[in-house]
Length: 395
Image (cartoon, rainbow, N blue to C red; front, top):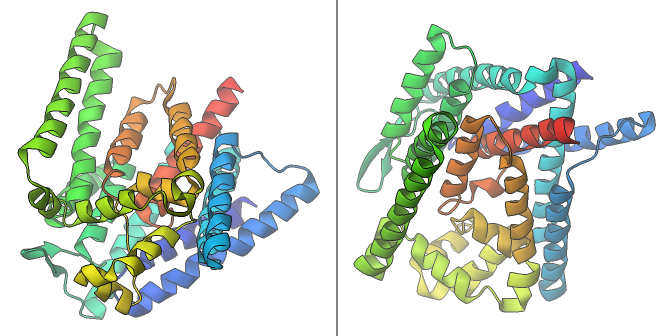
């Protein structure tokens, strides 16, 4: 079982990376190749049920699944369309797969399984990066692509923003290794440069947030006395309030929308319509609510009109809006409680800093709800690993 588990995981990471390529043939290969986990999950569950060894999935995770299904049914009842249910089931299968992969991986590697996981991921990401650049050179794909008003480094993926997220994922994987070699430090330097050159503000914001949280936790747990810690916490709180105030009062709607590359316009429409068909309470399944917005407002936005004409998908550019519109407000509550459960009494503060930094990034990107892309895969693998580790410790 261990060999099969590792093989499927290797294929999943590779195909998931292929799936974010701009080059059509590689993208298509990744899109369909990663579905290899569907029969594997089904066969795994049947095999473990037969052996009487099927492990339990965390109850809060199961709650999220239930709310997503309820949201999908709500969408079916209102539009007679099953697309939201299909995407919700795909999300659920991914998360179930991560659970059972980690259970098997922990059984194979013991208490140090998280560090062993990062070692495996490092090898897989290094392999994919080398293969990626070879493919890009072979098909003559430009490494520099147009982004906003200039050029940004899109690497082998061909999309600068996605390459930035891939590089960020690789950076974190190597950063978390307990023992680093010279090659690891080279990778850290190269991926840091790639994140900068990709000009992806989302990935750059997450990296800055990570270091701030990392410093904060290190000071809290290792150096600061209680009252000094409270003082630092107060300073951070005031800084956040001033930042929010300046963003709301000091800038016009148009300026904020420009800075957020159109996100404010989408968020405004999403919030204005969120009570349509009880979406705020029940949800609409994955990707269904953005389609509703796309169809309703295509006449007032050239971007919406072109996106619908090309058969593209609208992104809400917020993980939290996506969760609410998928399974209602209770799905968001369940998700936040799940994160709280992971962070509570977590002594590995660098992992807490990572999770919190991605939660910050989740305000402006919906990657948390896309577990088939590298950064989200890393997020869910670590969250589930810490949940399973805590279950072993605290029961």
